[in-house]
Length: 131
Image (cartoon, rainbow, N blue to C red; front, side, top):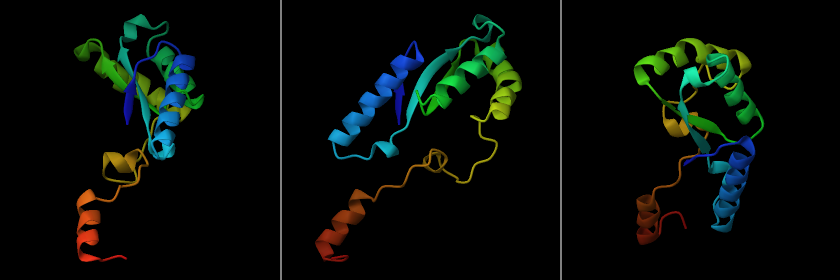
């Protein structure tokens, strides 16, 4: 998982593509990389507030600019409650917000496979198991 900052969807998409190229160049599966945009949420700063934020999130996600968001409330005691009460239902209606989770871990929720433990691989090599 990589957290990025970007001012536009195009900038975020370019960063995501660059990270995927880097993963591929290092022998990693880019499909196992999740790129999240860190976004400070000040609902008073958006025209139409929660609805405008929901639209921005849905557009960026649908367009493939990012895989998800790391949202930071500008004023937690104000923005967190408004976000959960007003923006989340709009996102759930538009599709990018999950209403159920199949797994129990963050890795499960992100759809990432669990890599083999380096210790298990080392133990097999020392004992000759799995060869």
